[in-house]
Length: 192
Image 1 (tube, rainbow, N blue to C red):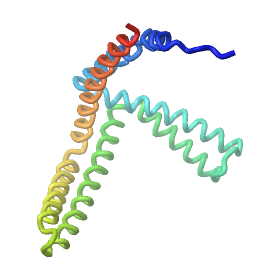
Image 2 (image 1 turned 180 degrees about the horizontal axis):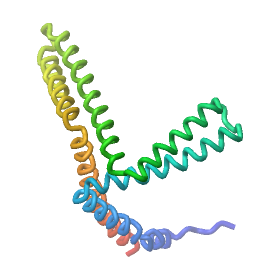
Image 3 (image 1 turned 180 degrees about the vertical axis):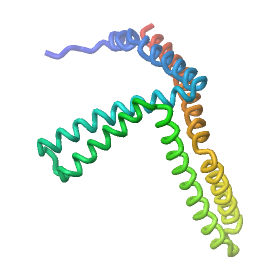
């Protein structure tokens, strides 16, 4: 026996859940505002949660090493688990200090990446400057030069670069939240 699906009933079911994207949108906007106004605390909170993850991951790695349920070397699994617990404990007990260390590390990696990418672009741009692709290669050379300058600036202030990332994330959350709220009211109108 087949049951005919009524299109309006499907629309009504979808429309009855309009409050879900509305709630998600409001939460995203609130998170965005909080992250923008409390950048340091946001970094600390993210690292606290990451620290908890590392602790639990370390515990499970140690259990796997002891039980021998791993294809990896049991000794390396055990060492990795202990290091994960230590790093997680540090992040949980000192989230601001862990944030500064992490922000410095991530910012330095981004800066190095920009410098290496920029040097590569400059070399390629200079090698191609033989006539036919001169405009493109000159642009590539100067884009590479800008990447190098950008990388040097980031390496000079890696914590500031990470804080800027948190600010960009907060703007993205606010924009996504507004989009979800509009989507919620669009979904609500489907049932009408």
